Image (cartoon, rainbow, N blue to C red; front, side):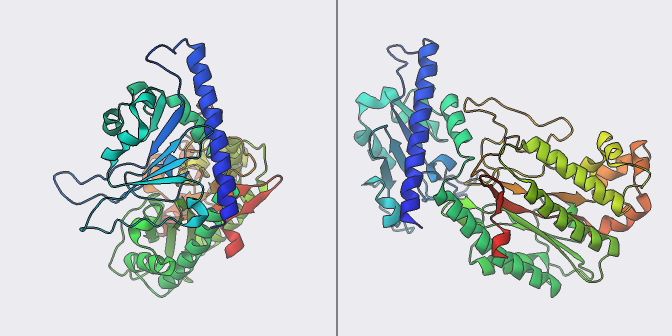
Length: 456
């Protein structure tokens, strides 16, 4: 970790929180909401979250810290707190239970610890004494544990104030140099996993073996992945979030779609690759190459000021060309004909990408301002997760896909829209599943930095 980059990162977060509090308090004043009980917000307490257990069981659910806590410091542990008051050094209340059942050690590396006043406690119950009752009326709480916030004496209207969270969510789309460093490192390691997964596939590995080859190459546990790995062979690659890992060998495994990332200091990469065997259907082989080319063409389009909805539409137009060139759709149609009828969405029902950072589907993707105003995607592409205007140092995925999904295609077989589709070829390609190619991209002052390809 670059200590100077982390220091600059904290400065940026501090500026964002100060601006957020100024805005929230202005809103309170304008609404006449400041009264004896409804005071302005002078400080914020961010909670990582509490450990949860499966119902009627003593087994803990794998923990994932709240994103706004991870934005401050790279500690993925329950019951950690950051206290921020404008003008003061942020405080890290480090909860380290006295425990001989589990290892509770928390390492505080100098390159980030120096940015905080660290106060070590053995229980969250000790926190109230440090906060002081006199200031609780002006303290906001960010986190999922409302009961904990209430136990500290924090008013309900100061728990997760929507105007404060909207401002902070919007800011997270623009990354600091520290965050970009983590995302680059996460891509670099994940690509080692993808290379190992492809080799395992070509050697006849099962989904389960391919999954383990990926984890081993990345040197991570499954629960350390930023999301559940998608490891799909053949027809299963047409299931967008396929969750299983079949252990049985397939006689003819011709297609591998693997969507898997890696997490570094709380920041996750999200990379998808589609590989084919030498005896795969020749049209599907050509489609795979065309989709890889299409994805790189989209990366080359990225620039500040571009609307992501227009970017998605460009992906759909390019997909139409691929469908026509390979006669998946009949050549009597034009790209405009297919777009007008919504044909490409049958083959790519998801959006072309999403914001990326601490969360794989990072927050604020549909916000168009700091106030939390929502810009929903167009009705023709309701699954698009990002409707932002591209800005410098914004990071998102680019992931065009082409799938042969019976659930979407079969209802069209005898419709007017279905007359555009080459059903004989579709029937031949159902067994191949689908194709997705995904990179992680940063917007620079004029072009895109491909955080993924630079390490291949």
